[in-house]
Amino acid sequence: MIRELLLGPKRFKHLLTALPAAGTNRLTDRLHGLEEAGIIRRTVLPPPAGVAAYELTSAGERLREPLLALGLWGLDLAPDDRIDPGTARAELIALCLTGTQAAPLDPSRRDTFEFQIGEEVFHLRLQGSSFLARSGPAPEDATLHVSCDLPTFVALALRQLSPTQALKSGLVTILQGNRSALTEVFRALGYTPTPGSAHE
Image (cartoon, rainbow, N blue to C red):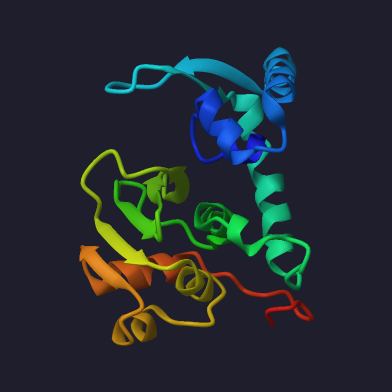
């Protein structure tokens, strides 16, 4: 649940959709427990939504780094046949990738990079010189807006495919922005497999 809120504030129904195994009662209990512990709080989404949602508190945000480290550790593992590949989500991979940024970018930049991966939409926002992954479309005009399928995005994330190769082969479509912006994202968020990992 905290992982989902690392991607931004979420309504109860969105959390339930992302965590269907939890069920309504268990999810309600978990939310109450995290709220009492000061990890999350209730909020209201900005217009036009204007509805109740949950978000991480500053204490909850302190869990970002260790959870991203766990996600990157998971990327090193071999695929598990017991896991339905249909449950894979590009935004969770993107969230993990934000933990790989080695060098800060210009803190004055306010660029946003939007990705449409199949029917899934998320964006990366530069905030304080670092990338922040968020669910849904960018709230403002994006510097870059690209479209591709999940296998292509995974190959880009794992550096099995370069942005140049993906564009030349027609696997990625730039809907807005330019090639250099796409290259910059995957250069800054450079996943490097651990020696001996499944992707080395």
